[in-house]
Structures are given as structure tokens and as C-alpha cells.
Image 1 (cartoon, rainbow over the protein chains, first blue to last red):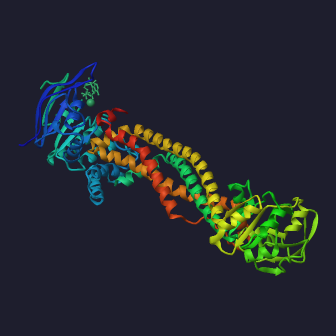
Image 2 (spheres, chains in turn brown, red; image 1 turned 90 degrees about the horizontal axis):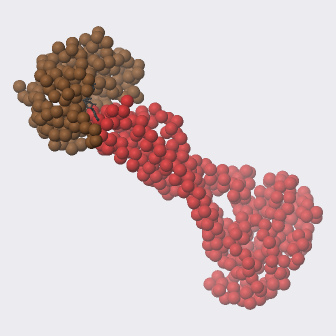
Image 3 (cartoon, chains in turn orange, brown; image 1 turned 120 degrees about the vertical axis):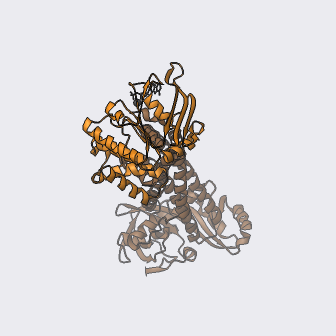
Length: 222
Length: 389
Ligand SMILES: Nc1ncnc2c1ncn2[C@@H]1O[C@H](COP(=O)(O)OP(=O)(O)OP(=O)(O)O)[C@@H](O)[C@H]1O
Ligand SMILES: [Mg+2]
């Protein structure tokens, strides 16, 4: 299979005075269609790694290639375009817009990718149905349960039909029953061909993955 | 969803703050609009009143300045300083068709102040082309007779069967003039000799309207007049110029205060937008992580200030318009009083130039104020922005 993500010798050092080596010379290759779990104790660098893959931050050194494009060479603008076309992100803390309804939160991602309003509406409705949230389309995040919010966040990450989906603790704030449901959604997405990288503490979630990567102190242990 | 809807949702979330910010800029723009509209209307008034004088020039005491000319145009009381003997010498100057002496005083009718103008009846009739609506015009032999401007007759419900007491003297009302829509409507007229007597002006008059046989020889006449009397001669176009100067001076002084209002509005917008950027740091980070470019964030904030600027200009103009509409009648009582009876008020009319100016100016202020906060928002590094919980 095609290598959708290639990371080589990636290092990220935070801070100037007090230096934190969050990532230490990491290399990793992910094939298209893989479901990968990154685990490791708190502070080991999972979020940092996802942020760098998403182009939200620059590495101190090393190279990232997504879909053949060397993203570590791109500027802000190019990275923004890359994100809206190639990467869907689900955050640790949902990160929905409180002023927008579930539908509008999903539409927003497509609006940024310059999709027409018609197609935005159609696609948002489709995704809400798929996530079992058709009846919550007009609800604001504060009217939704944690699990529902997370499903909206996943729907938003899927909105632009990007090849690569990054998820940071997608079940971090959810009870085990809801986590199970979310995992099923994730597994289904993966079956539909999405490449998914999940950062998680949750061992049961990690077991769903094709491959588990364990990190410690900014390095890959396994 | 589109960007406008998105911005609108943010505005709706902070309605009060939006409203207060808008209020700040609106007040500034409203004052500007009001001042300009008033100024424009006052200029029109100056022209129409100077034309309504019917004379070619005015002879005034030497010491008069712009404010006294404005008083003449407004039909307000002025002092008297030209000796009747001087006036008689001036009357003998060749080429003067009309020399109409004027004394402007005031009296009370039903406790309200009313202008009393002492005139030479026949000269004034030629000058103003008055028509009598009721009764008779003043006769040159009349002494304690008075003719009323139309608004005065209507307002105080007076007619030729009534009498009027001016300075403890009983006057017969001989007639009522037809409406002229000038200040002439809000004065009463008595022979100037009578006025000089009852007001004890010590044989002095306020000023003289003149009309000449050949306007191109005005300069010669002025020299001749000044040879026989120590007076000033001012042509109608000079009166207009002087009065416009007064208007401009007043307007410029007021503009200074307006600038302060505008500066306050400007910083109101800067403050609101900077607060908004701070509040929404996290959301800016999310937008960026969803693929929003810097320009998207920049646009989002700038559209918000654009809306403030546009509404500020638009509402400001309307408020200024209404303000000038309600202030004008106080400044131009003649129009106001004829309005009360005939609905013929000359109000400030919609002025496209001032309207466009208000909108563009308000937009310029708002956009300038929004530039920096919007730019700062657009440059926020996404990871850092999202770290704020
Ligand atoms: N902006 C930053 N400035 C300085 N240090 C940082 C910054 N972000 C992360 N770090 C440090 O880098 C290390 C890795 O952090 P990271 O957030 O990637 O961990 P994580 O594996 O996601 O942890 P968790 O499981 O708790 O979410 C930590 O030691 C953290 O303190
Ligand atoms: Mg983390």
C-alpha cells in the first residue's frame, strides 16, 4: 500500500530557556488505510506529534511527508490549505464552536474549504445521520452530551472527506459505554478506507488499531 | 454557512457590546452629518435671504462686522448709529434710486418678543414688492399705524379691527402683508420716524438699504456716499460672503469637538475588537486547525468592523438629519412660524454628498480601528491559540 505519511528523524524542542524535548528523533511510516494507535503516558509527546503532522506547529528538525508532499517545507498558508484538503482533526477537548449548531459546526469546516452552501448542507446532514445525530442537527454544543459532542467533532473531521484523520484522545472525556460506540464509528470509518491515527491512553481503544505505537519521553518504544 | 452568517452569529452573541460600540461611532458621525446639513441649509438660507432683501447694497455704521450682517439677514434687532442728517445727505447722492432707512427694534405681543421694523413705507414697498393681504399698506403720512407680517397676524390672531400697543403707544393695524416666506413674515412695520421717536433713538437709524440705477457704477456711488457720510457700504455679495464666513467659523469650531467624538468612537472600536480577538483566541486556533488561512481570520474580524462602520455611517446620517431637522426651526424662526400655519418649512433635505461622505468616513474610521486587532488575530499561531482553555 501507498505510504500516506512518512516521518523521519523528527525532533521537537519546546522553549528557549527551559528546553523540553517533546519529540526525540522519531521516524514512522503509515500506509494508506491503516488504523494506528499512539499510546504512552501523559507528557510523552502524543499531542505534539499530532500537531506536527497536522502542520499546526513546526518541528525543530526532521521531515514529514503527507501524500508525497513534504509538509515541513510549507509555509502557513500552504499548511492551512493542506489541512482543509488532506487532514481531518478531532481534538482532545471536542473544540466545537459554542455559538454554532451541530450542523453549522460541520458546515464550518466545509466553508473554510470553500464548498458551496448547498453541498455543505447536504454533506452535514449525511454525516449527522451517519453519526446517529440527525435529531440533534439544530442543537448547540451545550445542549449535547459529551458523547454527542465528540460525534459532532468526528463528523466535522470527516466533512471534507480527507484521506487522513488525526484524533487526539477521542474517548478521553467519555464513559466506557460511549467510548465503545465511538470506537465502532472509528472502526467503520477505517473500513471505509480512511487512514486514522489516534493518540490515546485508552488501552481498549488501542486494541482496535492495526498497529500500536508506544511512546516514552518523546521516543518510540515499539 | 458563509462568512457573513458566521460573523453575524458572533455579533449576535455580544449584542450589547456591539450596540455600544456602534453607538460611539454613530454619535460622532451624527454630529458631523448634523453640522454639515445645518451648514448647507444655513448657506442656502443666506443666499435666499440676501436675495430677498431686494436691495443692491446696505449702508451701515463703520464699526459693523460679520455678526451684524447675519443679524440683518435673520431679522434681529441691531443698534442704530447713523445720524438722520447723514442719511439725508446720502439720499441726495446721484444715482441712488432707493434709500430706505431702517430701524430694527423689538416689542412684546402677548408676552412674546416680536421684531418691530421702522421703515419708509413707499421705499420699502418698491424694495420688497410686498402685497397687502388685508386692509391697507402704510401711507407715508401715517404715524401711529402698523402693518403686520403674515405670520405675526396668524400667530397672535390679529386683524385690521385690532390695535397694538408698542412701547406704551397705541397703534392702529392698517393691514396685513401677504406671506413672503422670508423673515418679513415675522416682523411688524411702523414708519421709521415714529420708531425713532418711541424708541428714542436720538435721531439715529440702524442702516439703509439702497438700490442704484446702474450696478456697474457701484464703486463710484460708494465713494460718493462715503464723501458725505462716515459710513460703510456693503454690497449684497459682500453680505453673503461675510455671513458665510461666520457660518464657516462656527462650523470649524464645532468640528474640533466632533473630532474628539470621532476619536472616542475610534478607540471604542479598537477596544471592542481587541477584546473580541482575546476572547476568541481558542476559536481562532480551531479555525486554523480546520484549515482556515490567515486571510480568513483577518476577513472575519474586518467584516465585523466593516458592519460597525457602515451602520455607524448610515444611522449617524439619519440621526444627524433628524437632529438638524429639529434644530433648524430654532435657528430660522421665520420658516418655523410659517411652517406652523402653512406647512412650508424649508428643512434640510437629503444630501447625497453628505450621506456618502458619512458612510465612507465612518467606514474609514472603523476599518482603520479594526486593522490592527484583525491582523493580530490572523497571525496567532494555532497551537498557542488553542492552548487557552
Ligand atoms: N507549548 C509548549 N511549551 C513547552 N512545553 C510543551 C508545550 N507543549 C507541550 N510541552 C511539553 O512537551 C511534552 C509533551 O507534551 P504533549 O502535550 O505532546 O504530551 P501528551 O503525550 O499529549 O500528553 P497527554 O497524554 O497528557 O495529553 C510535555 O512534557 C509538555 O510539558
Ligand atoms: Mg495530549
